[in-house]
Each structure stands twice: as C-alpha cells, then as structure tokens.
Image 1 (cartoon, rainbow, N blue to C red):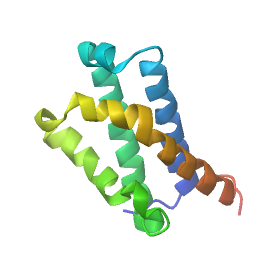
Image 2: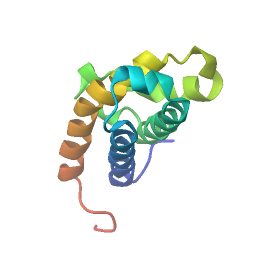
Image 3: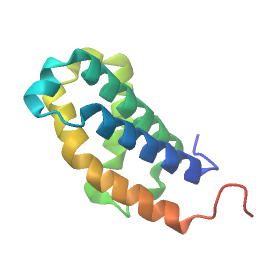
Length: 119
C-alpha cells in the first residue's frame, strides 16, 4: 500500500540514516566487520529504510534510477526472510557510501512536500 504521507516516510529514511551514521562513527570496515552488535543495528536501520521506501512506493523510481529504489524496497524482504544471505561487507559499503545519495534524494523530495498536517 502506497503511503498517503510521503513526508513521514522520507523523515523515517533520514532518521535511520542518521542512526546508521551514529552506529558506524569512528569505525573502519575491519572494525565494523568484527562488531556483530553494530552489524545487527545497521541491518535493523536498513530494514526500516526499506519499509519506508516500500510504503512510499514507486513514485521516485524514474526520477532517481541510479538509486535502484525497487531493489532497496526488496532489500527489506531479504533482511526479514533471507537474512543468512546478508553480506556484512556490502552493508558497510551501503552504510558509508550509498546512503549519501539516498539521503540527498530524501532531503530534496522532502523539501518539495508540504509539512505534515498542511492542506
């Protein structure tokens, strides 16, 4: 079901990106790969991001084809059902590199939307 409240979902994306950054702050990849608690925390944030994007639906897919948003929406299912296939080095790359583009997209689109509660 596509959300009637994309601003809320974009804020969820931004909040979880901030959490990911907090979790990995001061770490390098080797430290991340050794820290199962941080890996678990980052996975959970990605699950929430994927769910927020699933609720937003395909509205931004054509605008941001380089972000592979359909894959991101599907990643939530992988995290829930195929968790043994999750590769921590790939999580590291997403957490430190790819979230930059996702954050930029969320901020740009949020700026275009009226504030929640406005007409």
